[in-house]
Image (cartoon, rainbow, N blue to C red; front, side, top):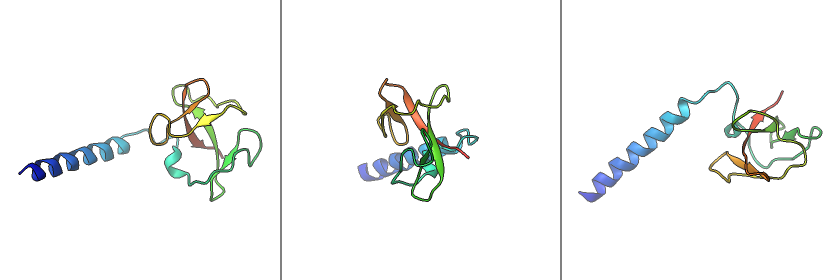
Length: 97
C-alpha cells in the first residue's frame, strides 16, 4: 500500500513539474535548447556556441540584461539551467541570432 501511495505521489509531482515547464514564457528560449559542451566567446566577446554551433548569450534571469563579458558564471547553481554569476545573480542562457 505504501508503494502505491509513493508511486502516485511521484507521478503527481512529475506531472506538476512538466505542466509548470509548459506554462513558461517561450518567447525567450532557455538553456534547454542548447547542447553541451559549450564554447565560450566562440563568436566574439559574450557570444558563445553550443555543440551544434547555435550562438547564445548569458543574461540575468530577473532583468534579461546580458552578463558582462569576462564575468565568471557557475552553471546550475540555482537549479537545472539557472546559473549564478560571480555577483550572486541568477543567470540563464538564451539564443542570440
